[in-house]
Amino acid sequence: MKQCGQVIQAMDGTAKVKMQRHSSCAGCNACKMGSSEKPIELEALNRLDAQEGDWVEVEMKSEYVLTAAFMMYMVPLLFLVAGVLIGNFLLGMLGVGVYKELLTAVIAFAATGLAYLLLNRGEKKRAFKERMLPSITDIIENPEET
Image 1 (cartoon, rainbow, N blue to C red):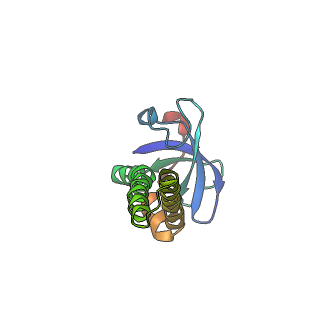
Image 2: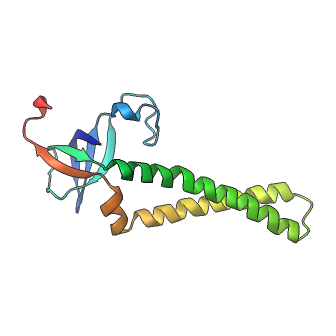
Image 3: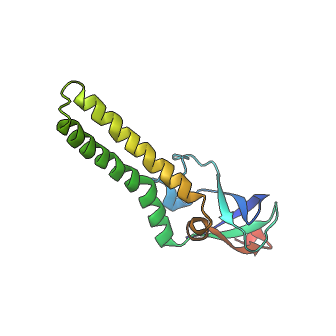
């Protein structure tokens, strides 16, 4: 998926790029923009050394978009379900009868929180950024033509 945007901040190896939402984003809400027409700001790998104010083409491979969506939605859901099953099983083995459902819910939400902590920790690793972040593929000289 390719899209054009403007670099608003150049950082060490990455850049923050401001762009309009793509039409395929309409029902996704992953960027928390809802259905508004506000621009998106995202971090992208900056191997071309684009500077602040440059117009650039940003690309993210489709398979990584699906992988990112899986990681952000399915992994926490799987941890939640595992937390419910494990909590229910352990509390049943321990003979907890009072507040069993409440304690199971606490364990399930703790497992979900653990999933987000693990995802956040993995996101900071360089190998993750190399694969999962969008990449600046071209610096556009004349943005009016695109």
